[in-house]
Amino acid sequence: MNQDLKKSKKIERILLIYPPVTFSRQSMKQCHLPLGIAYLASALRDLCEVFVLDSAVEGYNREERVGEKFLRYGLSFEEIEARIRKIEPDLVGISCIFSSQFQNALQVAKRAKKVSKEIITVLGGSHPSFESKKCLENPEIDFIVRGEGEFALRDLIQSIKKGFSSNHPQGIAWREDDQYYDTGLRKPYPFLDEIPFPARELFPLEKYHKISQPMGIVYKNRPFMNLITSRGCPYQCTFCSSTNFWGNRYRTRSPENVLSEMEELVEKYGIREFKFFDDNLTADLNRAKKIFQGMIERGFNVTWNTPNGVHIVNLDEEAIDLMIQSGCYELTLAVESGDPWVLKNIIDKPTDLNLLEKVNKILKKKKLATYGFFIIGFPGESPEQIQRTLDFSRKLDLDRISCFIANPLPGTRLLEICQERGYLKPDYDFSDIDYFEARFDTENWSSKQIEKMRRKWFWRYNLGLLLKHPVRFFLRYQNLFFRPRLIYEILKRRFVL
Image (cartoon, rainbow, N blue to C red):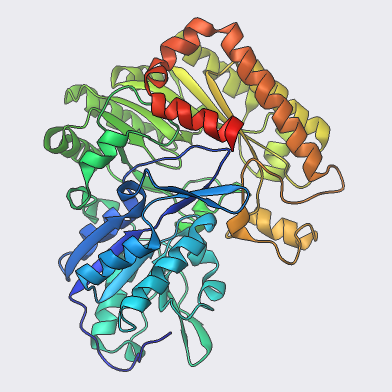
């Protein structure tokens, strides 16, 4: 903390920054509007002048190596410093959603302090929310907003204006006189309809549309745009921090509010495809049906998919028909495991695999494309159970599949389990996480064994999919074949780097 908290400070200009992105060379780059800072911008602009900088889209074509395993794309830190210097903000807010991004966020904070030590730096996102004490060991970071940010950051700004020491809002962590302070997570705000729509007009939308590299790679129409209709998830899977981040509550926007945002996206911005970023779009199936029905009745004539996944087992045929009629062409199915015991006793996810298979057959009958998420390498999971998951992934015969290796993240029960059992080395580094590599050994298997099983599965599954269903594969993803830059990046990641 470099600030004198007792004095009131003017905050008239705010710059919200999405830092450059570090990613595994085994994965693909993404480029979508950062909804987190877009929501913050809309919530703050009645208090002060708000600027945004998405370093990822502004410097998308700039790539550099980060160690042996990772690459980074986005504006250079020198370019970010120049933008900060030009705007002259009183406060810089920095997004840090993933643990792998913390070092980038920290570098942005350092650049802000280099411009002026009087600039107040604030970090927000999943990683600093759960690792706030550790993050604040870096003096370039003044405050951390823990959890949901719109109202916490508003209150922090108003408190700083009046003299922070006399008023400590909820959801804030900071250091003062070498002491760590934390007011705890805020109570989740129950009325999501009252939060303004993301301030998308502050971003260079034409750049996102030109790059067209969405989460999950696939799209059917351009331009597309991401949106989120709910916060949190009703389940508490051991590997996921989302439930804790959003205050252990599943909250939804009303169908009317969601449809109004969609209408704005279609009419104001010319959007032709939606990307639902909800953790679980269909958890409240009746609400989801009303959204799909409203899309049909309003004649949006868009396509859409769910790159972040849905819980498939609560879908019925009526919901699936409404999805297709409203423009859905692909569902991402968060299956996780093909072993019932692992789902119940390790992952804590209430999935009935028999019911999942039945719903999957309906999706096939309706010719709705499917993309599956699977995870292997949990503590307590045996090699036989892992193989059962890999076999189940083939049995479902989905159009696409990603198989990840379990990595303990801040804010998850998985991290606590690994720490309790002594699986993690003292120098375990969250920023070094790669979801295609195992980071620990257990009594049942070694990290090398898990990686070998996944690698063997990868080639067997994907080559088999292409050979078994070449026509279906091409029809579903024909737009991939006309994106030479994407094909080049895939080949470079897989065979060159």
